[in-house]
Image (cartoon, rainbow, N blue to C red; front, side, top):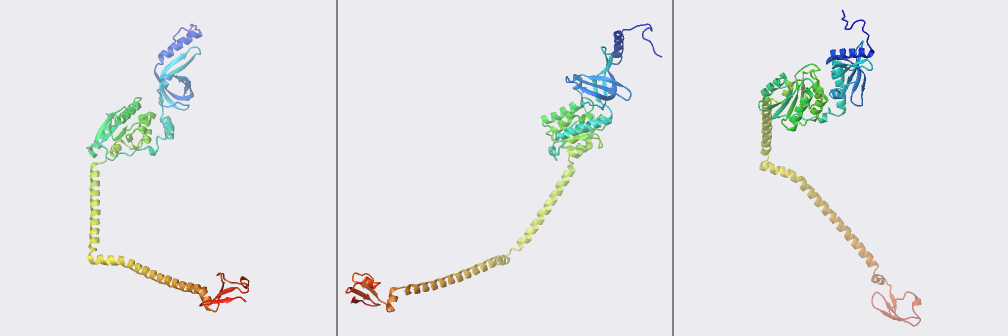
Length: 400
């Protein structure tokens, strides 16, 4: 049964009716929550966002002004289902009503996963998840830091496991909000604090399990960048083993649970001692084996065996020296023999060409009185005095 607000004979003007509707709507629908799918999304150059919220049967115009839009943790686009908080407003000149949104977040797990996947691809393209950026987790940390809720079960598990595995490791808690709108700035601030003062060797960032909405702060872009840019090695430990967050990809190491993160960050003291004892025993065995081998080797170096070893080494060199000496001697003898034969042949040639040898054969040399050699009859005149030189002596003659 409906109640009529005005008498049936009331006559409104368009303006007066619109004013009544405006007052009724704006006073009745203040700070309401509304779910719907974004359609016709059109951001304004001034920073205001205009779009339509719709479901299967209806739609409503929506606006989010620049100041509120700046607080959004995702980029709106058509097809995303959102949950909005706002108030109904009537625009009298057109007779339209719309919702002015003060807060908006993703609604529905499917939409959240889609947004996270798109964000993951964009950050991966920037290289934030590259393996060459990742740092080695220290094996012997003196201090580990934990960025998480100071009242959560995750912190209690980490403290218990750390104390059990190695009581000498100090744990510094960086208390942070891990759920809700204030979570991401709180987590980023504590990661930066740990880095600014270089307070720990390893940093665990995480929380216990929860719904996908509960874990969203660890997938916020600001948190992912803070984890990737941390100079302190970071172990991401968000939720349970089946849960995941984008900071898992940016961290230097991903642990399936906060308890597993503590086991990764803190080596068990008894395991270290056992490993050291094992290394010690292995080293002693190797040293003893080397010593025994050296003893056996030294035993073989007695005077007789040393002389025999020396002779064995010396003999080939002596044989090579003897062979070289014999070859050198033979070569010298052959060279001397050949040189002597060459000298004899040279002497014979020189002796054969000597004037004395020629004269001894019966030849004579003729000279004129002034000592010129006579080679032709034209070299002398009739009645000229000449000198004839046989092999021995001299004969004076007159040309006829």
